Each structure stands twice: as structure tokens, then as C-alpha cells.
Image (tube, rainbow, N blue to C red; front, side, top):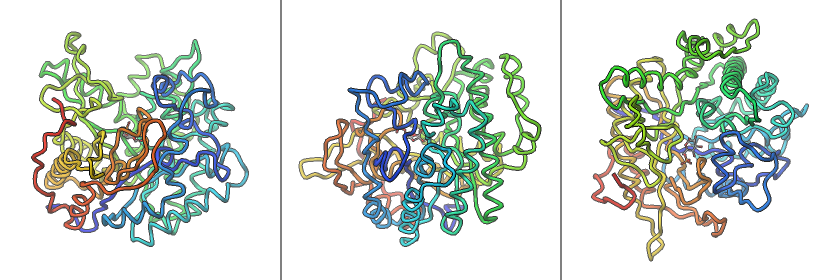
Length: 487
Ligand code: BG6
């Protein structure tokens, strides 16, 4: 009744937040290459995109990121030193098909991931590969309006088949779309959607969602044909909504909020649109264009496991007074929960919420779960000796992993845990380097300065021990009530 043998301990990154080399070796420009650090970022992520080219006078930290593209061997050696069993990464679609539409794939892009997977395999680390972690080739946004157009389904299927065929003997675990429900909240980030005046935004978002769901199902189907051993999962930005009070209105609202996200996974895991989604479309005058055969595709392309990220639980209320007190920082609007702490960036810290979320997902889908992201973004400052004593991170992770263990005892099947950003990378929501998640410190800063040198933090040694004991020894509770926590 604890972490099973072969549990996939490790870490997770995304191509655009780590690789850098944003136009190297033939890579095409993508939506995520157009996200500057600073005031304009949030608006662009929402779909108010002033230009499909980088803007003059703005800084784009992801263009160089932490230069994982050239330093992956050194980084993987550090992951191996921690004893990683798995490493989650994403393939940049535009390294393989720079404009999304080439007849033949870009060999240099394919070769890069070949080398990367070989390096992982050399260290007995299982690659877990996301096909789309928030990236769409800009050429497809210009030509088709990105996922609002059904054309993307075929192009994505071609991309998926290309990488499945190429890596079928190196990669077993796949994820189709990272945090597929992000599309509803940050549509340019999640799906490359750009809005113009007069657009029916809800209609466009749900049509794009249908296309991503189709593309996901077609990829799952193709993957299983290419290699029946493949395990292909979906990926939800999870975190159960709590009702602020036991007022039935609040309870119902919490259920509705959860369903906004479950909607995607219901389709990907059960293979059909749920009744509540059909009602939502009707009530809101949304007409999802489907072609004959779409329902069969969704039915035939259901996932093998449920991947999810968990950072925070969420809270909702129908009381206008309560709703005034929202937490800052979190993409998913949430009322402030008085019972839990918050991170420096205002993200709720609720370890028990991970147990609740895991139980809820398992009850609903009865498929193995994979925690593919969890972690604490904090501003680590090296001390006078250059050491990073990140007790607050150890404390966060320790308490979350302890709750995961409880979920396993509850009977939930969990196959792995890859913490987010095992090495510091660029933050997706803010573009900052300062928001660090790593066990490995990278000397790079918000303004692009720094040597890119890597350094082990205190948590590096802690996590190494967690993996070595298969989660049995989570270390002592940290006595630190560091400045990173504020309630
Ligand atoms: C998830 C994403 O939303 O959260 C990652 O899949 C992201 O790409 C992570 O980096 C943490 O968020 P942030 O904004 O702190 O980087």
C-alpha cells in the first residue's frame, strides 16, 4: 500500500521553456516564441495578439531559455545523479515541421530528439513525451487561424505519426496535449487562437477544443497501431474546486467549474461528449461543427492513462462579496481559501488537495493516473557561499508526495510523479526566470543575464533520497517557515 515497484519518479519540462535555440537547425517560429516577459504577456496569451512577429523593444526569455538544446547531456547527467526513472519533455512541433505543412520532416529536428532520447536511455531514464506543450507553428496561425480550422487536425495527425514512427523503439509513454483545458483560459497559449473584433470567442474556443480532441483521438489511434505497447495519455490542469460554503448554490457552482475542465477528459477518456456539455452548448447558443465519423473517432481514440498537473486546489462562490477576494497569480480564477497558505506568486498551497484531486479523477475515470507536474515556484537566492537552501521547496514537495502516498492507500492507481521544472526554466505564466521550480539552479535571470551555470540545490539531495527509497523516506519535516510562505 505504498509507491509501487517501478514507480516513475522524475521531472518534467517543456521544449519552449527550456530548449532555447528558437530558430536553430531549421526550427520554425511558434506561438510561444511570441510571449515577451512583462506587461504585454498576459494579454497576448489571452488572444489579443498585436503581431505574429516578435515585437521591437520586448524581451523574449524563451528564445534562449536555459539552452537545454545544447546542454541536455550535462542536465540529463544531473537527473541521473538524482536517480530519475522518468523524464517528461515535449517535442517542439516546429522543429519537426517548421511551418506545419512540409512534405517531409526536418531531419535536424528529428535527430535532436533522437540524441536526447538516446541520452536518457543510456541513463535508464524513461522518456515521457508530450506532443504539444503549448506550441503551434506560427505559419499555421497565419494561414488557418490555428486550431479554429479543422485543417490542423490532419496536420497534427501527420506530425504525431511522424514522431511515433521515428521513436517507436525509444519512447513508450506519450501525452497528446499538455493541459488541454488551458485553451479556455489562455487561448493563444493553449491553442494559438488570435481574436479580432466581432469574433464569437466562446464559439471559436469550443470549436478549437473539438479539433484538439479529434486530433488527440486520431493520434492515440495511430500510436496504438504503430506500437501496441505505447501508453498514451491525456493531460489536465487539475485541482478540484471547493465550494466556499455548504450553500447548495456554491456546491453546484463548484461542480460546474470542475466540469469546465472534466469536459475535455470525459471526451478523451470515455470517448464521447458528456450530457452536461451538450446542454452547455445549447444554453449558450454554441454550435460545434462535427463531421460524420467524428463520434467514432472520439470513441476509438480513448487514452490509456490520465496525466495531470497539480499545483493548487481552487475555491468558488456564488456570493458577490466573497468573489471580490480572488487569489492573484493563478490562471484559473479562484476565491481565496482562508484555510491554506499561498506561494509568493499567490498560488494556493494545498497538499491535501492533491489527494482529493487524485481520488476524484480515479473515481471518475478508473484509469491509471500519472502526476506529470507538481512543484513550487519560488525566488531562490543563493547565500554568500553560493548555496541554495530551499527548505520551503522540500517542505512543499514532501507534503504533496505524502498525500500522494495516502491516495495510493485509498486505492488510487498512480504510475508516476514527475515534478515540474527539475531544473530552473522559464515560467510559462510570467516569462520570469525568477520563478524557479528546480532541484538544479540555473544562473540566468529575468533580464537574460547570467552564465547559465548549473548548481545543485539542497532539494537535489532530498529528492535523490526520496527516489532511492521509492518514496518511503520523505525526510524530516522542514522547520523552515521561510519567507516564501505567506498565509
Ligand atoms: C503548467 C504548465 O501550467 O504549469 C507549465 O504546463 C508551467 O508549462 C507550469 O510552467 C508552472 O507554471 P508557471 O507559470 O509557474 O511556469
